[in-house]
Length: 254
Image (spheres, rainbow, N blue to C red):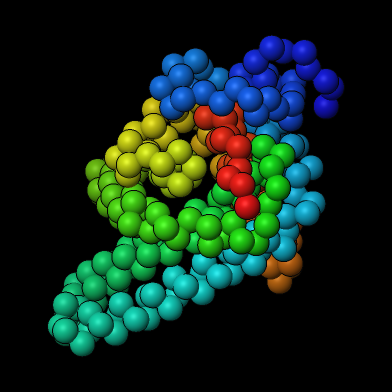
């Protein structure tokens, strides 16, 4: 990719997504009002280039996230069955119980997912990354938990409303969790900021995540080995999109 002399690199011209100026990080309001653009091909290219040096951190963090989610699912399922909140005598009762458990367990694991996402964001902003980032946001457990719960409930409601609203929200809310931990927004503020920002180029964001998802799916065919490269690529791609839209604050001092 060629060097760019654009005075505002956060405008993210399609010809160069890599040139950064960390001294100019817009407020959320400024980010929503200034507009942005990018090309899917440039984000894919840059995310692939930035995979090196982050594979172990992202894969390790993802494994911990899924392990915690599975453990939370088991514990919550046991508790719900013990106190009778999951009626196992009917198919409907089993479905509702499993549905509620899956939502809560996923939300409880979101602080770890936030850490994985922040690794991608820091890599996209040329900031130092370390495995400690995975656990660095546990102090915001409650707002992240509430954001995850609210997000999933709204998406599921949207799916019940002829599916399309759910698909729209599932893409529009992709950056909500990072906004809670990186900018300190409240759950609703983060959801709305993510939705308003991504909605400016919703179909492009949908195309980006669809392509990244397909790349991951194909790479998983040979014994999941390809995910060692494509999962970090997905996370970094999301980080690049976050950087383009909102910018990235300097990393806190160690």
